[in-house]
Image (cartoon, rainbow, N blue to C red; front, side):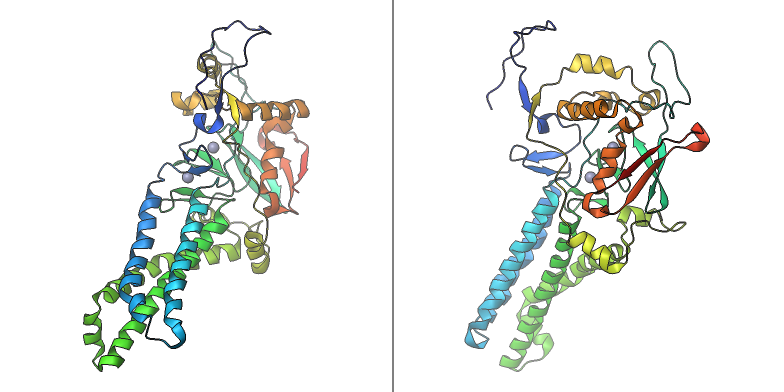
Length: 407
Ligand SMILES: [Zn+2]
Ligand SMILES: [Zn+2]
């Protein structure tokens, strides 16, 4: 895109003013993400670690193809030896594609608000009125009912929204991510609602690749033993590459295989890694657990919801000075927690417009707390989930009276 000329007319209300210069949304994205291909691929800030992961996958496969599979080509009848080489190459390509799908896509990032939500009457239990701040307080947590079980949702200072159930803020990427599982340093990306399926497939396929290479290294060793009639130790010495690969895949399979088993367990219980290590469902039942079969179907047999972010859309270049002045009137709780950098709001005009629309539709009521849209994010993962928003009654003593069916 050609660079836009700097605006010369600052006078407000000038109907003949030229259209404001536009910029791709990803260029002014507030998270710590790294974008490639003009915003088509989104990675975490540690995206370079994916290069190490790719090397750790490709290097042993190259060694296997050169020193093991190539030697086995003519050791099987009917050219079956070729299939060993072809399968490992195709499988490796599959693993790499799944790795990019896991790492390079929006994991389920919640669009940020540019302003704190409008406080509802029910939420106003204190007001601060001084020279610089006039925002009433609102609760930092709320309780919602998910499948008959009360779940606490929290307000995110950085994203300025109430996180939907199972959403959490990744400190590495600096984004709220739906159905947050964890931030994986090996793929350099959050694992969440939109890429968990790919992540699990990556673990399973990597484990199978390790087992495949491990097995055919032993096949090669036994072939040497048979053809030269020597002991297993002498045969192993004749193929040091096989020894290295056997050790490498043995160690690797404990890592990726262990993770595969662990995530298989998590899926069967419909828990995220984050929820599991916080022992979230020790004291109460898991409202998302629908039984093992349904839990697996939820991960693998549902459509992945579209991204809520339009990283490539063109938006007006934000006006920093006015936005900064607006930030001075932020919620007092936010002021105490946020850095100056975090306070530079107003950068995501595209989301701001969306939020304004919602606020207009909802008439600034409690719904403008972003909950309806937020709760909608469960999407296909909670098709028949009935969610009712409850107030913190001990604080407000009144009912918010919002009910919302997630479709
Ligand atoms: Zn957040
Ligand atoms: Zn992250």
